[in-house]
Length: 157
Image: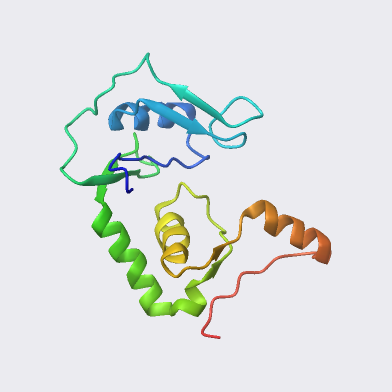
């Protein structure tokens, strides 16, 4: 966000058509992906989208930091432009509500391309100066503990 370049995180469950639509609508020039998400390779990749338009379908509002897309369950995914101040304001509200202690350690249960996870999970944890527990790290912990099942409990502890 600090670079002032709008980003468009996309969930791994988007179909190829939904992904292409979102990237075209956002005017994405570069696609960064990992082995599980959007890449066909087994390694993270960077791809310059020379074959696509390099401008969004419509000009972006001034101050756009993030373009997030709906699931597209009723057709093509719809893009929503969000400003840096709005995103950080929501993340700070999460920290203020939960307190630094509770917002300071986070194990994501949602994909990072989901707006809720990105703002209330990752960004709130970073604002709290906390630790964002990467899923691979969490999986190793579950393996070491020989957990038979996982359960998410939400409460005021």
